[in-house]
Image (cartoon, rainbow, N blue to C red; front, side):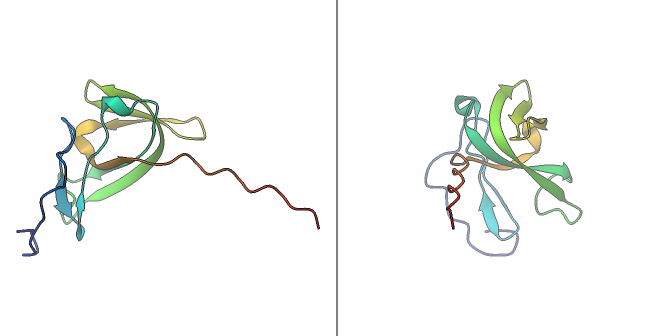
Length: 110
């Protein structure tokens, strides 16, 4: 049962070795990224404050970019601006591989 008394379904496939499903904010959060995804574009949600997504004082943020490194307790993501963000793996509550940025449509002449 979830903290709200709702049934929680089992994940359809097991999470990666360091990943873990968690329950919070009305949905299941899954970490589906690990070292095998280096070079892929990823979206990672992680804790800035609190120990769990359901904590009353939790503060989370997201980073989207290409996974540069995963190991020694840190995931390194390069944003499209070139900025590097180091995320503590223990603070990650959800992560997934996302598609490449779609190309901009060509300008049409009037």
